[in-house]
Figure 1 (cartoon, rainbow, N blue to C red):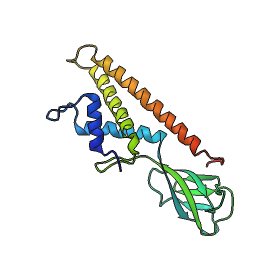
Figure 2: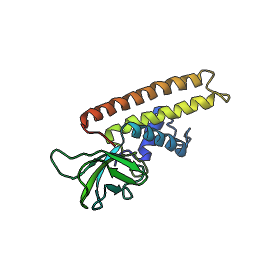
Figure 3: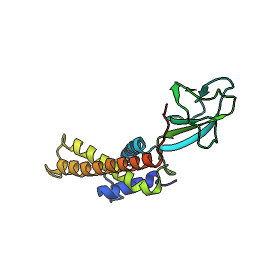
Figure 4: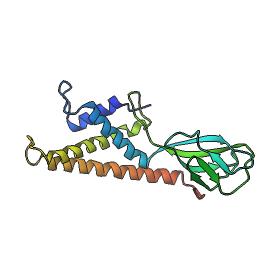
Length: 200
């Protein structure tokens, strides 16, 4: 796993010029909240992709989602599995139950569920790819700068009257770049894994 919280904090501090280890401007908890916020934004565009084989109930089109990870969003169902081409069927979800809307009546064999999950980060690492760590640190730094700009409007600022504007400009340019990059990456992923079936 790449990009743990400590690595993210160091990158964000470098971007913000917060380099005095003895007297840091920002507390770890403050930076962590913005790092996780950036990860939430990243997850909207490029969530984790996963799949799981779940047993069906003989004679029923309903499949329990109780064993799927929390916050999962099902994007596809294959039943029966391991056919070529894959047999991907439409479905609907209500609470913790998924219902197949077409295809063979299940006989107890497994259905393969494809789903997405939000990314996670902690002291041990994150689920973000190594080559996207700097991208997310930039997003987090921009969020910190935006917060600083908003708060500086309501207080006397020793940096002068232009400080808030400078923060807003810096934050705005980097947030624009961050979201534009995520949109581009998301389009690339969509084209690469495009589906020719109707999702539920």
